[in-house]
Amino acid sequence: MPEIRTDRLLLRSWRESDLAPWAALNADPVVREHFPEVLTPERSAASAAAFQADLDERGWGWWAVEAVDTGEFIGFAGLDPVEDGLPFTGVEAGWRLARSAWGHGYATEAGRAVMAYGFETLALPEILAITTVSNVRSQAVMRRLGMTHDPAEDFDDPTVPEGPCRRSVVHRLHRQEWRRTG
Image (cartoon, rainbow, N blue to C red; front, top):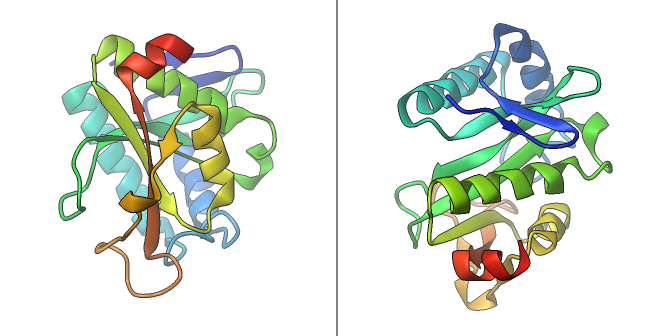
């Protein structure tokens, strides 16, 4: 299974030692502000196991993200097919980092790495990213990655319960545009 290295990050397989910091990240209400709820340690562990199973099966998916200088697990980033039931299909890029890793450019760095993998290794024609209307931090990362937003594609996510996290936006980047700017 491939690892992805950047100057400061290692995107890699999940380890047993990632489970406690992953659970802490998902229990942080600030990190989970744009999700319907925080996750229990059991649900966090189950998600990590599912992510690793996808990596083992496909060779790509949601990688654990480690800061190279410290070896510390700081979150996840990767690519995954869009969930069934959404009003579009494709492959989604995403990231979620511990609050201590915010403000260092790690999300953008990890995002660039997974976009490069998606376009250059997987030859995807397009990559998209989805977040809530209110998640301006992630939308800023999407713009830094060269992705564009069409308000006509905003939608109510049917996989999310009614409430402030349901209204979502889609940002897209086509491979041709990546080649020009990437």
